[in-house]
Image (cartoon, rainbow, N blue to C red; front, side, top):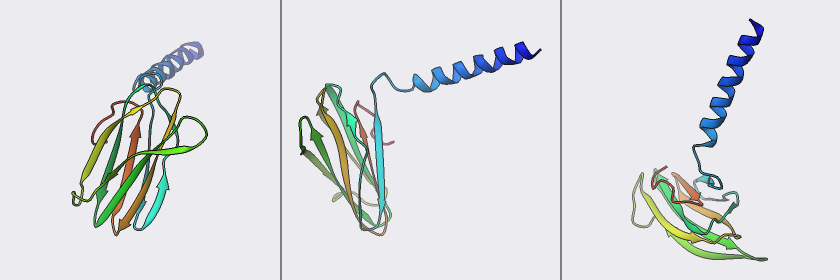
Length: 131
């Protein structure tokens, strides 16, 4: 009986591990960060894969957000582009695709103002437009 319970438990764990690991392809990464009010935050660093990645910025409440995509291929970080929420209102989303070079690292810096919340997602693949 003990052996059967162990077998069922092991099979369940293996199935769960497979389901979680197959949600993203090998090498695919997504990171995010959020701020409330007048604050600044940076995402964790992800690796480029030699294909388009996506940067998505969302605001809620009375907020304004701007995010900067930065690339590091050698010793220093270089800004690659900006997204801002000038043209959107509460619940607004802006998104853009950027080519993320293989062998380089990427992060997004987020600046928020106002009374609401701003959140940024950085994908090293062509992720969803609205997370």
